[in-house]
Image 1 (cartoon, helix red, strand yellow):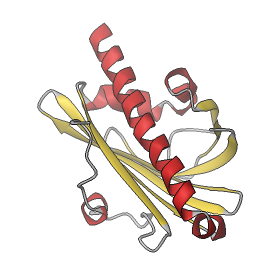
Image 2 (cartoon, helix red, strand yellow):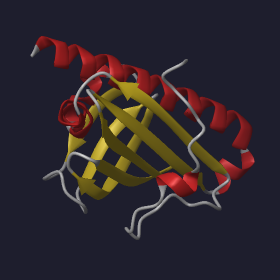
Image 3 (tube, one colour):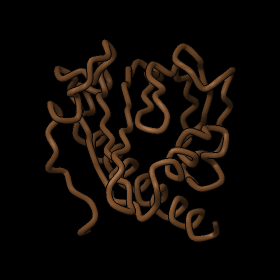
Image 4 (tube, helix red, strand yellow):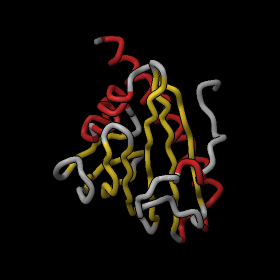
Length: 167
């Protein structure tokens, strides 16, 4: 798609100063980006409302934030049939949100960065996936998770633009 690209390097995405980062040595590294015709705050409102994810992303069937939207807070969610517990490690409204998670021997770090553009927002995401299952099933797991990231970006775009046009 013309509004998506995988050309951004992990070094560019990781140029922040926080300690929690993508694991560059992980067997699976994923990234994606999309331009959304909505302001950064509108996109943030969709993305940061974790309990609302099932409303716009059919891969997520439930999501419960166990406290305030801040580093250290956990959230439980079901995605693509898997039950997950994730912990927020970075929340910098309206520019960045990141979390870690574990499930079935897999360790994940996932982050979103939102960059305001003239009348739009560039959303960049990246994820590292580590652990024995990630090494053993690298190819199929990478393909499945990459599809999930690209689908989520398209759905985030659709929902953000829908909400922005309704204002």
